[in-house]
Image 1 (tube, helix red, strand yellow):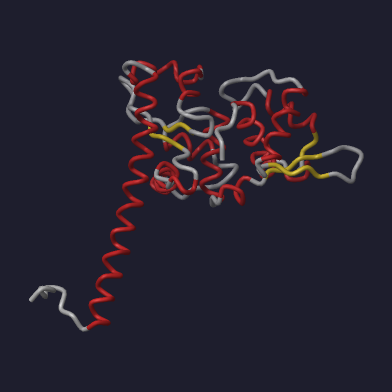
Image 2 (cartoon, rainbow, N blue to C red; image 1 turned 120 degrees about the vertical axis):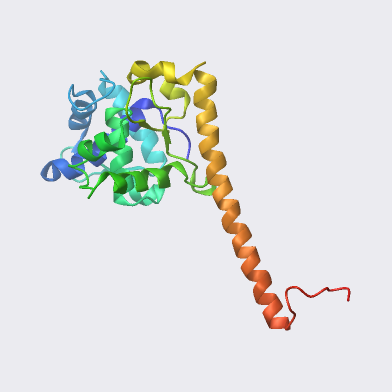
Length: 233
């Protein structure tokens, strides 16, 4: 799946959020989606998207099978399909959506901020799902979140989503408070993204090696050959 624009990500995020927080009003009408995208609370950054902009974003998300359009009533309504399309558990989607809607946060902040979407038992549970998202293999689309360098004076590192790519972190005003943590800026952010992809590929290769080793051991056993035997002897 391609990287999303910031508005596409916002639209997807509000559809998932409202499905859980206001289920009686879900799926959402166009007007409700616009209002949810532009609301002033629990949003970072605050947007001022027009109905035409949101309509374009919805059409793009429909093409990616991330959003469905429901007709049959007087008003066309929209619902998300993020978990099924991206193959993610609801816990992971809750964290991803919280990052999309509220900007970079620590694990503890995420636990509190995502409580209405999913209630995590503790911070370590949040960390577990974040690591899975950060180490997502390339064949599944690559990492979806990244752990940012700890800002000077901060006690904990923050996490950010990668749905819009690493470059979007530079353009986001939400990163200004800890911009110095990135040194040169863009190069370091790209390096963070590349490192996450490298770690995911490394984990994938480790699994492949283990599978090959198991296959070789099984072949040795079926052929009745000792593994330390010298084939040429």
